Length: 504
Image (cartoon, rainbow, N blue to C red; front, side, top):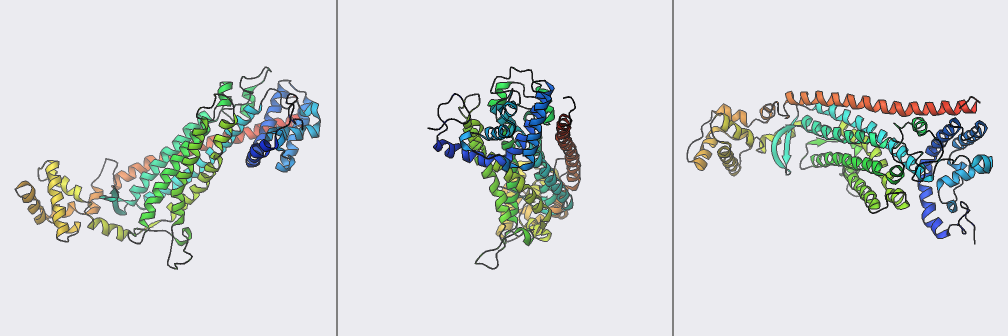
């Protein structure tokens, strides 16, 4: 029978089946990511303990030197023993081995693994939030640039995957940019809830020592401490919120990828992507497979799986700390967020390098009857029909044109007159030039003004707003980066001051 390596109360050490089945895999997965965070938290905590006179200056110096040494040595400085249950106990064991139990054992004054773990998750998710927002800003910049570049590129617009109305590629890309703007806003808004420090919450009920939670929060770059100790260690909703926002983000990108995927097919052939974003077949020499688009389409499924695991993992857990909520529920979260970070530059590359086949796009909208609504609108404005009557008459016009093998741009006033007789029992008379203009897709695009439509007038106006919002988002993001960077400078300065013997 082995003794516990971490408790004077437990009569037996951790069973090997549990140590190797649960503890070891979790530690091995997470330790490389949390090691630098643990070092930072330890330094901030020791600085606070010294300033509050909860440890001596000499003790603080020893603990800080030890922590800095281990940080320089990297993860290899901490031998991981699953019998010690957690990464923190292994870290602490190494500190105690180097400094002795009296000094090394004082680092854990006024804290728990529970608030440590909650703080790891906040710091780690904060880093992902910043990186995702950085890369999302870059993608939005590419989209707005491409939208401006292709604002006059007329293309078919679809609903239900059927030709609907003429739009432009610039207008389409600008729509995606608007969706990504909201995706950014969701992550940015979550920052206010995410960037609160759990340190000082202890196991669940705070601490009996006179600690300075504001100081620790400041040294770690948080906006302040978490308000409620139990809530601080019980909840991971801010992380799940980030994952939820990231899932919506990948869905927006996946839908763009799906549209591009169709546009690059041989049969549709309205968009070209360079060879460097494609793969080939092992057997069919002619293949140019858009695998990058397939990968982008697949990301939402990965994120949704991680999100459902997280939500299901928290379902019916006690409102306190537990491994099922704090560890098992988050099993796939970090991998999923990393996938978002990796996917965003690919999406930027796709947007930047996509080139429309302009003549092919224009030929389609000249042929596919997507100007039918414009013809109906003209019948209302010029011919005096109700829209419902005009709708029926134009439906008949299109049917006659299809039966006679006419494309949309071959519809003429005589065909309109015949359709009027068929539907209304009387002629609908329009000037030939009026009908010709109505079925011209380029005119159809430019006629949609002041309604958020694809005309150059509206696209330019929307672009101006989108660019202003992007600039504001970029500024806010820079401020948040600066806040985190400034906290690191403060922490390093506080550590250096103590190590040089200056009063805490």
